[in-house]
Image (cartoon, rainbow, N blue to C red):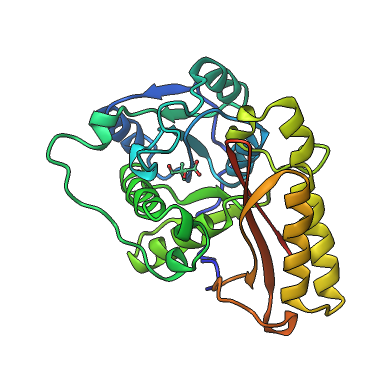
Length: 296
Ligand code: PAF
């Protein structure tokens, strides 16, 4: 499925930077939005615990639009009861300082009752890339929760563009399909993954890793790169993936999946000729589940 490429109403040259507004209620958000009259707006949806990957999304948004709003909302509906909603890192003061330093115009920080008030009863049930047998196989509740909250954020903020990191590659494809299918007039922009020096993809969940796990975690990206090189040389897909899995298992990972998929549809591929190909991996080290992906 090709990404949408609708033009964004460009960034106008005379757009003075204002101080960061903290918006916590829908009326406050709507007042702020109504005051923008003709300015282009970018939304960066986040769950907080911001790292340089998020800040790269903000910088991208800043380059593309006159006004940037970052949402911070740890969305309960995308976590299963046994997952880490309760312990998900919440670092409001540091997040706000980082966003102010980047001259973000507004931070949209609703609470759970604002997003899911008493009687809330509507949920988006995504299909297509949301049923590709990747994250959805291990987190069946996840994309319903993501799509419901992202649809709400897009309808609340009405941005011209919304940015999503390629690190959550299936999420990017799912949200792109949702915006297209529901005629939401926001361009979904994918932004390349930001990595630590040793290749580990930046993630708020990296904070859970012990020093030993953190040292082993770089194997994930090294393995993806090695598999991509082998696939480019037309080595057999199945054997390459089996050996890739074995390599990260040796480093201490328990593998959920390592798959080569069509980069747009996420359909299974039998050979590199069925591409463009994306390699995607999810694996647990200790109690931390990491995901990553690269283009082949
Ligand atoms: O990628 C995330 O941080 C979340 O899934 C998102 C898109 C902010 C929705 O809660």
